[in-house]
Image 1 (cartoon, one colour):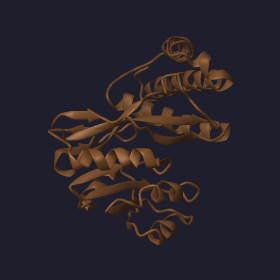
Image 2 (cartoon, one colour; image 1 turned 120 degrees about the horizontal axis):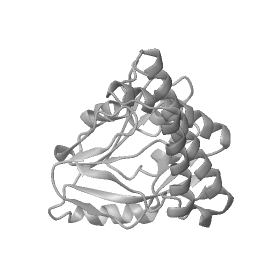
Image 3 (cartoon, one colour; image 1 turned 60 degrees about the vertical axis):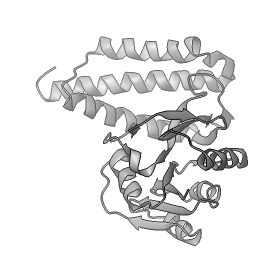
Image 4 (tube, helix red, strand yellow; image 1 turned 45 degrees about the vertical axis):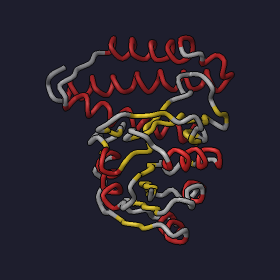
Length: 252
């Protein structure tokens, strides 16, 4: 079975080498870059990846479908640029592809770090993500931000995790929070959803309670508390932005 690893990128020179080096054993590396201004493209080509540079940014799902369209393997493994594989995950994937049975795809647990700590609770573990699939049996959703793999067939599960450096510091966290809350608010607004200040407060409070108490964030130490606050803020600002969009359009 030929395996293609696909990645989308933009200005990821700090992490892209680690990602691709963990996948050099695959038959093919495919990177679709949306106009990096740093050394991302140079690093990808240096490591032997097939690189396509695009001038526009259609969103995560459509961009990943562009990468998928360039892949030639029987199976495809999708990685984010801030993710990487361990030798143990490689071995499990190789064994799985030697005998995939009737499965069209496989989900794997993702172990993510927040400000230097790999989280074991807070809703971040085991966080199964479908990343390995038959090329002819799956596509990415058209979602701009939180895309997912849509699979035509049964999905199995792997045991070994893919590693993910989700948030490196608070500055990066604030940038992501602002970006994701804006994108989500716009998507909600386009779908006809509306919000009030009370809606934002309730969602923000619930996000903290769910992360810190129901999902055991308190067991992740200070980083668990920081993540719970970040989730609360992200949810609060998502609905406040939606409220302001509704007001601006005359519907709120």
